[in-house]
Length: 163
Length: 435
Image (cartoon, rainbow over all chains, first blue to last red; front, side):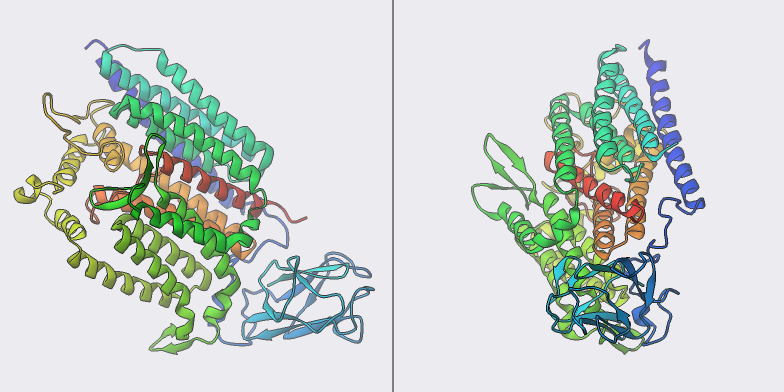
């Protein structure tokens, strides 16, 4: 029984190391939080709720969508500056012709696709274009709801939907 | 300090704990202060550093605390399982290595984990298929009336529910990220509660069906509760409708009440839970013996515990164990016995922090699939801890699920490493700055 003190020491040592470690994790996590989680620093950072469904309860048509207006961000598109954004309001048409969002893209039809609002949800629909519309690299068949961060591609033009 | 260096530093305490724990057990067992414990600590550190290097190379922005927290839990597991049975510990160490290999494989194969969305129906079918396998004669086996796993004699024993929980979360996250709008639009309000149209209760009914299937076919209350709660959490995050949760809870309560009163093995569990110290139940086979002795063991731990290896698991000369299933179901009671309230609280805090990191990942994620996946996996993990710790501490009836990363059990350890890999993948993507 000569090693009894060592055994007790080990037990308390174990507990002390354990708690120091947990305090370290909690402390560093807290510091991250204070710095505003400094990792994601861009205007594409998500609204706090990436599922963004709180707005659905607040009735229709009012602009309480997390304080951010729904908009289309230009990723890259001929004739557009990457990073600029189109506000969507209650909907918009995309195409080469006389529409809200003009595409300077040889692969776009004159009235290519439209985005419209159904209550709190924005929906995208292809208007029978020649070369199709791609939502997150999948060809669009029929109307599809848009989620924040979705990528819309028409020909060589690519946008992302933000809300 | 950069995130990855913080992760590396965080692995040191876990390895120290392995060394200290093994040294403590050695002293208790043979009264020697052996340097083998240092070797074990070094091997453990080596394995963790290997995992860390992989993360450093492939997921540079992943959450830096998740991996050290898991290493801490695993170090607890290895020490406690070794203290209970050294043969089991050798197997547990092998499972730990296999878990790390699968962890690496998941990270490398599913670098773009959103590919999983494409296989969602395959994933859910395989998961459900795996889950009913234990019911087939010949390969299935049961423990205490619940059909828990499949056994291929001489090869391996496998608990499919551990993997199915990940598959079902992937399916539901992917399904709801497409259809959650539909569930909310067109809802009516009645007495202040939003009630979606009947047809949109489909996912709730499906989840409820899965939970009841587990209960009726497999008689496994623990997994059933874990699945149901986890999937309901995904549904709540997807729709932010409390009505789904309320309806779901009521449906579950009704189902649980019916089964608790009509299926004898579940009814017995409830009786054991309510009256563990009733001498009649205590003495009966499959009675409250386990639960009551677990509580005695936890009480004996006091504030700081009795020390490593000091818990009495077997009476000298007795035929069977004082606490049945010490390495799996009751491991939390043994930890409380040997490290006391402080040790047990530290385990719970570690779980809490891990789950908090998981939910933080969910909040930071930029697409709805990632959000739902991270919150679903975290919720499932948290509920698994709740079900078993709650059972051992007599908050809910005791049912056999494993304590993640700590309990002895190959499937559990390996499956939870896959879960960790998915959470790290999600968090790396969430923290990546936009191009």
